[in-house]
Amino acid sequence: MNEDSRPVSPAMRVAVPLVLGIVVLGVWEFLVWWLEVPKFVLPPPSAIVKSLANDYPSLLVSLWITLRITLMAFFIALATGVLLAVLSVQSRLVEISIFPYAVMLQVTPVVAIAPLILIWVGVEHIDRALLILATIVAFFPILSNTTLGMKSVDHNLRDLFQLYGASRWQRLRMLQLPAAQPYLLGGMKISGGLALIGAVVAEFVAGSGTGSGLAWRIVESANRLNIPRMFAALLMLSVLGIVIFLLLAGLETLLLGRWHESAVRRER
Amino acid sequence: MDGVDPNQVVNADAPALIRISGVGKRYSGGTHALQGIDLTVAQGEFLSLLGPSGCGKSTLLRLIAGLGEPSEGTIDWPRASYDAGGKPERSIGFVFQEPTLMPWATVFENVYLPLRLDGARRQTVAAQVEDAIEGVGLAGFAKAYPRQLSGGMRMRVSIARALVKRPKVLLMDEPFAALDEITRMRLNDDLLRLWAGRGWTVLFVTHSVYESVYLSSRIAVMGARPGHMRELITVDAPYPRDEPFRLSASYNEYCRITSASLRGAMGGVGHQP
Image (tube, chains in turn blue, cyan):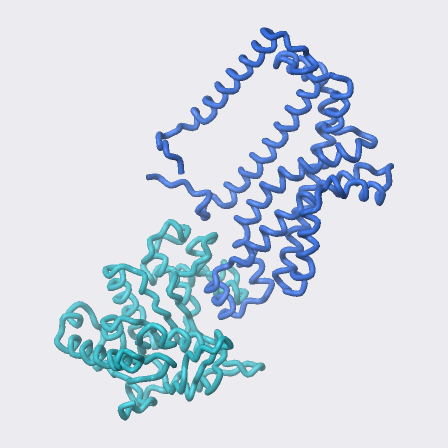
């Protein structure tokens, strides 16, 4: 809850941050010109826009490469995370055997595993290494959230299913998975962002391989002191992150909007 | 036990539906929840289990439902057929203390659940589900989600779900305890109306003397630590019961008798030196 309870219209929600952004960009542009900051230290926004306009064909190719790895990592993480969660809820034995290793994967910094993965997949398959690393990063929130969600089923509802002689499969499909939905969607929002971070960090560490993603563009631009292009690539990355987040938030509203407290708007 | 015959039934010709003999329940944690419970539930009666909290009345109801096994004694269903595994086909509906609805499903989906778990197709039982929803006075709310309903309406959905399979016995575990007085009285009346003349049996757990007298044909008063049967009170007042009964001298008299019995039940557990 906010202390300030003045109503905010949807138009203001867009307009106010936009105005702030324009002001900041204006001040930035002005200060760079006024203080004569060299372009390779801090380029003015206009130079970044120019670089974006000039380099966008090659930047878009890089964007696509990063996007592909991010999406693939996200979906693999989603599938394996949900699958392992389902298995560990079905069997206590599976749960206690999997969890320590899942935690281990989670707490070990991905940067530290990268060289090992790189050796295993071979330098000719760097894209596979990137995919594996991004998946490792994205996987844990899905697993832990889904497990928690499936376990937090109302006890009486569980009893009710038992009373009516529900099979394991019925209980999973009609009770545990729907109950886990809000948790899973929360995990997906975290995991979507982590998949992107994983894809970028992995590329920093492992290098680009055959194609080069946005991370490699940033490294390359830095080496050539082409700072405007570096900012352009950065901008693309953050826009990509925002789009992923918005899509997942939209999915959440779509699935939970009618029933879950988190997505329901209350009139006061 | 002041000369109570645990097997007395409302009317002698009503056949026994559930026969509970010598039932005790001890949890692995050491809690002694029930001891030596003898009770015969007759078909068609409205039997309340009344007692202070901790007297094991909910535990007993859950044992009858098959949620858990008694540590000693037996619960027989003389009129039920037994499946291959030796388990009685109980034909029960259960209403919990909370409405216990699936928040992600509409009223229709919630009421349809018991049939769906039996493998019944939506189209073939749609009318039956609609009937159950109408029966509890919620016609027109089939597409609503639980969070859009008031507490009393949610409880109605829960009752509709319990009745949709037309069970022989309805087990209710303090279903109206969390509701306000007015809603509660209205639901009491509606429950009696649903029960009247359909031949099914209600086992109703409550800690309210007034509710138990108003609703029941018989009241089983229970005492605590460990939970035991104290007294069986037959409420010999004709149905249908409504507002005049609530104001009548005989209602008051039964409330007095039942209160005294309940006080006796509580006196035995450390309220006296």
